[in-house]
Image (cartoon, rainbow, N blue to C red):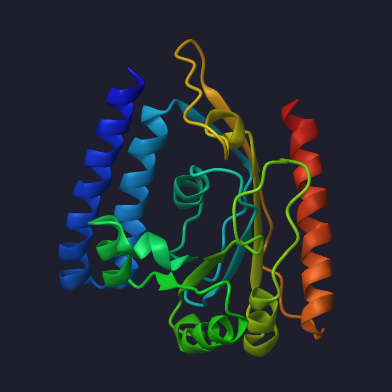
Length: 240
């Protein structure tokens, strides 16, 4: 049964990737990524039996203005969870290898997702600077400051410096997004842990947008790390 789920999920991802091309051509990148992303994530999470607690998710009031979403990274399911929960058009900063995946990578490039060379700080900063104007168009950029998936749902990996140089330069609003529970269904090491007898519950906590406060990149990195670690601890207690 697990193989069948994989096949259906891959087929649905390819179908949505193709559909995104057409929506993007006729309606633009923001509508394409918002509506196709919602449809894709809803079916993927339904297939896997994921139930998300959104009681700690506020509504972003000013959707005309873009910003940055910092999220903790525990599982492949983080991406569909963010698409499902957030009500703004989302653009992810992802490692270059993903853009080489047939259909998915092509759709990501076409819809304005961003390839970020995390191992090269100088090129990373250049990439961040190149998307600065898109913030003014209402684009929300999702960044995992950890740079890769972690294993501990209570303690994020050490944050990379690049996102906070970008934040320091753009002075953009920031939303923090933490989720816990998805790592049990699809951990970093191993495949899906499906349990057909019950739903997999994911706890999510999203902040209201933080207006930029003057600080150097190191201070910003430490401040957001402490906040996200505290939020993870709070939803883990709530979900236990």
